[in-house]
Image (cartoon, rainbow, N blue to C red):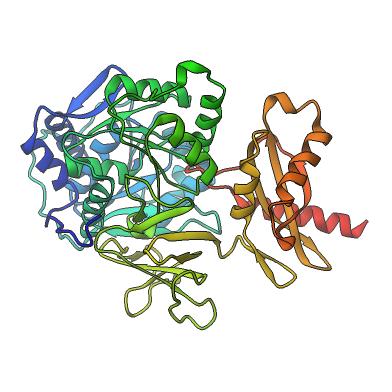
Length: 518
């Protein structure tokens, strides 16, 4: 991976305009049997830009765009920006309370959303005085108002906000992150370099939602994108083979399921079921267990690559090499990015393999939070305190331990839920798991585990649980050992696959208080 890179001096939507000029007939997006060229996507973007300009009547408006997995999202996203506005990303899976927070905090004036989200917004209109128009997009979409697509649009200030993205809210109320044109274009170039994307690449997105990182980096490189809307991992592999995918993007929860499916699939799955063109499987959103990554890599015959980032970093800051990396690492900094580890109390930089808080700085660092009263999390030298605990090895590879808010203390020892989960996940009887601390009057907290059992093992519930815990505890330190366990139907996760530990902790603390009162 290069240590530095040159970023084009373009507005965010200029990446698509450039791709359309370079390869007008090249495939930009494919969904099912339908595809759209770069020129076609650019023209559709002009239509959305004209619609946004017509409905807002001024540059600088904030325009909500739902990141659905279809061609309407990139056209609306780039169109909102091209009109002179700021695209506010809207998760179409969130409910009324989440929508109210996003639309109120960002003062959204116009929204491009699917019918289900439009229906929810209809119930909230009286509480959203800034919202002037809602346009339904997708299969049940409205005709776009707003005049010809050839309308002239204002020249963009590259330091102006291009996008507002809300954090996932796993540790509190979601915060609006302001990302400039420069931030997003820089990260598109960084991601394309880190993942080795080029005009001949074909990326397959097996994701529930469209993530701007995958969109912007592919458009920057002029790569084709294949959108897999089926949640079935094996179906996504078949699609990768049919379309000649070179890069397969998936979430850890789906990749964990895929590893289990392939292990039970029989001889037909030997070799490279995703097709001979595949060069890497890329995982993001949360940690993928090293054992799962190793099993997938062995079965598919390609490296399984992990990365690291957050909304405040546009979002990528680290990536393993597409050739692979050390087990458990999230890679080195992407080009032009610096990383260091600081002591949690003294805030002094630490040496190799010393554990502390991860700090990052680079051109992809956010312009700031939407609420100016939010803790800026960035010091005077431009270092972002990520809230993650980790260490860097002698080669610059970053290893994450856990979130500061997720670790807990048994006596005076820090316990990482993620580390315990990675041990549990290696047991073939475990379909999924989640770990957190259970309040304990003697030790402060003890390890609690919620386990989703694979189907064949459910009938012998107690024997199976005891065996799983015994096996895990033999590999865990004394202070990490699981002391409370129960079977759960599913692990509550965010749309990007992160366990919702905050909600889980609240429920367990309430149960612990009731037990103590008996």
